[in-house]
Length: 452
Ligand code: GLY
Ligand code: MN
Image (cartoon, rainbow, N blue to C red; front, side, top):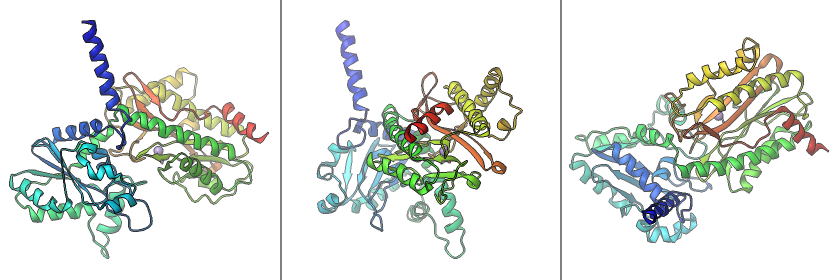
């Protein structure tokens, strides 16, 4: 019996290890990708998901796969197509690439030569066979499930991209183009008028909202890079420095760690505080300025979101401190309250009660101006504003989102933002981006230390 238990323990370690980051040629083990595809198959028992890979870039920028394609395959080959067949319970990867082109893109020859073995995808076919293969499935009455939403590439967020393309391209009378994805849907409708065509993105988005242990482990790595980059930026902050110098430091640290930016570095100070995405970096820091820095890295397809706030001269004024500490109290309370099963509305109410119990006067302007939505801002993952918007129902283990508390006082040219990326655990939450000095005394000490 003991031996048996030991055996199953070893098996569990093996299984867990296999689902981990130790993945060889793919970012995660192929079992992790297979598991993701199986989950999608269960949602589409009557059809096939058609996931278009990213196309080659048109300028001298490196090729990057889109998030959905990468999520289900881990494969970075341009112009590939992935079929996830919910009826036959198998997946097919279509691609054609020469070995020279592959090497040029940094794609391993082992992947090109042994794609089935490397990826664990059941069938591999040249892209030239895609149309015939799809016709065969269509003739068998398959429901076709392409994604109606735009692909996400680095620094893109699918829903926001759709909104922009809808306004500026589709509704523009001098343009009128459909998105690539809706154009593809139009082709499918024309070629297969008998078949039902449904949007796959709700299933994909629902799945991507819950992160696996391997994804969470990777997010911890991304978070460490983000924290280090913020620390270096904070240490370099002083009166007489341009905001673009600080942005460059953040980017430098990310790049030095092999990461990129998840989004442009946002720095607001002075009259720019009300503009939460101000990214021009055009101010020379003055004595008395207070900064909000919102920046996060993108590493191996995963992002974190972090905001920090501090004075340019390293010393908080009483008013800066008062607003900052109110924000911090709210953020701390949110982190204490997050747990599975609670909704963000309930978080807000519990946070209010906690603050009152701790002696805070919620009638003060400090608390009035802030959005008190329990800090639950947006999901974070492969995109900084990850698919699915913000948590609405009860929180669940594996949900990763930004806990974002901010207050803006335009009349006083002042704003504060404290934002961390958190994951819901079995019994609470983990602050993935912990490690930044958050208390006023800690921030002042760090800034004073580098000035000595
Ligand atoms: N990190 C950008 C935002 O969430 O506003
Ligand atoms: Mn955010």
